[in-house]
Length: 395
Image (cartoon, rainbow, N blue to C red; front, side, top):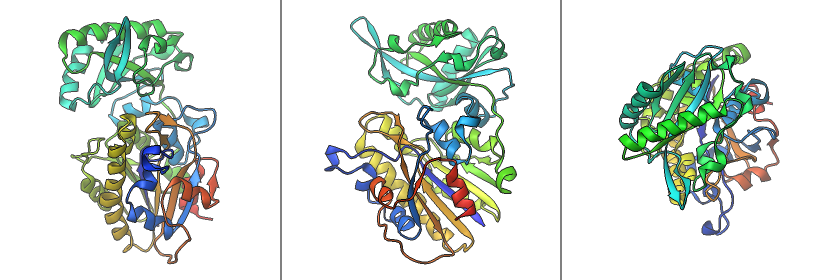
């Protein structure tokens, strides 16, 4: 059997007044997503455990069949693996956003968590500068994709426990005074000093962004592979280091797609090609698209609907056509969490999923891949990690 998971990051949302009470998924024109729902199994799944913060690291760990409560040890080490950065057991890794800070009176405001989405080439030169000036005493900066970068504190675990530091994701505080969300707990002062010194450097050198924000701290995890759990090999197709790292830790080889950007202008055809070239018997391909999540964080409703429709047209249509000729194949369509247009951040709650097995024919009563239609199906998975079991093992 061949398995494909298509994950549209942050597609789920709430009914919106601007859409006459519909959600973006309900309003979007998605005939191919709807075909997967009507020809297969539709339901909702809780990808975020009730006692954990909603986010892509936790949600996607669930979607790879792992219990985050048992295995999650922080977001940044997953990203480091996705970048090919060697992390030791006693290192502490931080996500390091390039950000734009504004002013409101005497207070600094988180103006843009993404620093204006700089090109990777532009961001890289400033991360290199930060490392030259601040990369001492075991600290090292690593460039990533655009604003998404990393800071590794070598042997930092000997001095702090990442679980004792409170670090707020910058996309949760857009428009808010940053002083209310600075690092807290054991080791926090060191983080604040690094952020302050980086701000001084970037204000002097950069016209695009003027600060960094540290968050997502963690240590190297120990995750069982798909081969160990299901006897499957496979690959992951994504522009996002977090997803590539999760894949690598679970035995899915990251596939490089040159035009994959993590934004709405990504190379959709290249991602589909990568799936076709790497899908074999007894394998699983995890295809991730970041664009709906980015649009949600920006509060851009039109862009979110466009991103959903592009996934439908440029990912689902060619994949469904391809898999229709591969009898022993199953497709899972899902999203990792709600990302609200109004809240501009990740939220906990059930999200829709659909599974289609291409060797089976028939039509279900469900007509739309969307939140309320999926809830009406009565299929509810309380634990996100159960979904891969359902995909691979069936009923």
